[in-house]
Every structure is written in C-alpha cells, then in structure tokens.
Length: 414
Image (cartoon, rainbow, N blue to C red; front, side):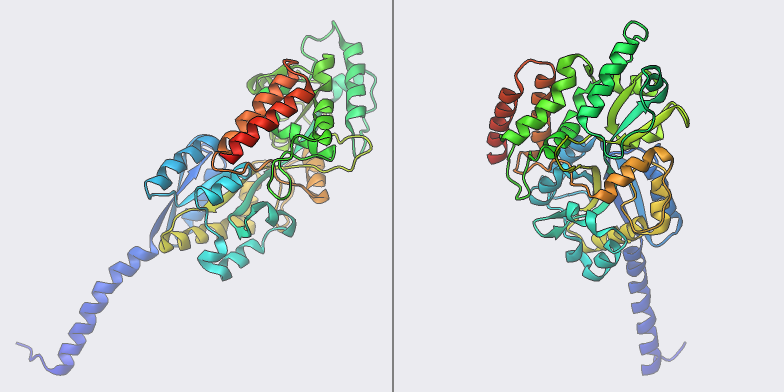
C-alpha cells in the first residue's frame, strides 16, 4: 500500500479536481448553435455553415429551415413565449422593430462589446444604421439586394431602342421605352409585356414613394404614408399597369416569364442577376428608375443575422460564427448567391449584370420598410393588399393610399 501522506493527498486531490473540471470545460467549448433559417440545406447559406463547422473551433452550427421571413418570425414568437428563443435567426430587415421589441434580439455589443466591434468593423459604415434599432446593433448586415432594371436586348433592338442606357434612368424614360416596345411588338410576340409581381410589390412600390420624396415609415419610425408625395409616387408606380404596358401577375408567373426570357423589361431584385437567362450580349441591366425632377433615394431588401438566446455560452458561440461570416473567407463564399457585398473586403461581383446594383449601393441605400408595433409582422401583408388593389384598378391611387394608411395605423397602434 502507498502511504497517503500530505503530498500524495494534495496531488491526488488536484488530479481528481482536474478530471472533474476538464469534461465540463470541453462541453462548454463544444457549443451547438441552431440557426432559424429561411434557407434549406440545398441553398448556398449551407456552404457558409459547412465551411465554419469544418474549422472545428468548438462550435457546431446547424442550419434549420423554418420557411420564409414571416413563417420563421412567427415560429420564433412561439419559441420566445415558451422561454426557448432560437439561438440565432436570419431575420428580414422589414421585421427589425419586431425583432428588437417583441422577440428580444440581442444587442451584439451587450454580449461582448470588443468582439462585436471587431466583427462589425468588417462592414461598410453606411449599412450599420440598417441593423441599428433603438440604438442597439441587433445583427450582422448579411444579405442585401436592391431592385434594378433588367432588359431583353433583343426585344429592345427590335423596337429600335438605344442599347446605351442612361446612368440614372427615370420612370418617364422607361415608360416611353415600354410604349415603343408595345407598338413595335404588338401581335408579334405573345409575352413581351413586363409584369409587376403582386406578391412582391411592397418593395418596389416603396422605391417609387421614396423617390417622390415620401415615406411609408418615416425616419422616426412613424407611419407617414398618407401624404401628397406618397400618392404621387404610387400614381407613377401604377401608371404602366393602368395603361396596359405592364401586367399585374403573381410572383411565380413573373419569375417563370423572366427565367424563360419572355420579358422585355423587368424591374426586380438584383439577386435575379444570378439566373438572368439571356447571357452576355443579349441582356442589359440598369439602375432602378427614379422619378424625373427628384433626387434618387433607393431602398434595399435582405436580412440580418441576429442573436436571440439569453444564454451567455450560446451567445458567445453565436459571435464565433458571426466572426467567420464577417471574414473575407465567409463573405467570398456567400457572394456566390448574388447579394451585394456589404463588407469592406474585396469580393468581385458575380457578373456584370450586378454593376447597377453595386452603383446603387455606392450611392447609398435605405432599408426596406421596417414595420413597427407588436403586430408589425402583419404590416407587409396589409400594404401588399392595397398595392394590388391599386394596380388592378379596384380603387383609385388616392383612396388606396388613404385606406392603406388607416388600416396600417390601426394595426401599428394595437
């Protein structure tokens, strides 16, 4: 038998204590993070997750598909109510107020100020206000797109139009071009008309309102839709549909027609540059049309990566993933999707079709409409409904804007 003297006792006690502590430390370092996501495992976001996990940094991330922005946010409401918020969620900018005030999105600086500042230093200062709600930085500015104009150059040429597009096009120029296409191709091409998607109209209509000098939600977060400027912007937005130049259709119909090469003109998300069907030499892109006589004030769409967990270990692990997302390696992987490069890293555009979108980013972009109030999640559907009614001439633009403002005011104040 070994005599248990004081030295042996202390050594044995130290080893026992170390053995007890070591597994706990290992478990702490090996954190599992689940991201509530709008993208499934077949989408490019999974490549970012896989690249991070391959580094084996002691944090494992799982990308869980929870549907579109609204579906994911709705599921998060139930999780938060049950005391089990998602560790992280890909959250649409349009739900920024809702994310902070209702779901409790964390201020990244509250988790770890030093790390948060280092992470956000990778991004352009112009995009940080888009993820700043109530003075809190609630996420990483992750996916950004902006509406631009796509043109089928073959149809454009058939109508005798100049292939050299203006640097800053306006709606008057675009609509006159559409009239010339209508005259030249009527009866010769069954699907030359360029539709307005009814299920994605809140985004492009916001551009027209802003370019007319109005707001849906003003910079102070207050509803400001019912103004002469907003009515003027919406009147210009609805003009080609009223004239029969553009056809209001379902978003799926627009996408199918776009991808088949059947549209002469389409004003839609810059991310469509990835699947633009015509190829080099057959397609042209331009900035989204402004309004003649007004300064351009374009908006953007997309999402931010937000942290919701109240658990410090999970929050710290989430920041580790955000560090990778903000790095040049993470940004380069993500750039393949076709979103704009919001970082300071030198990441090439995926193709030349994206140049007008990059130019709009350089000009400065606002966020898409961020709906306030506890029921702000419903604001998007309400505005879409009224825009569709105006496009389909079920109501006048003046009445449509007035009624939308009244319904949204009741919703937001609830």
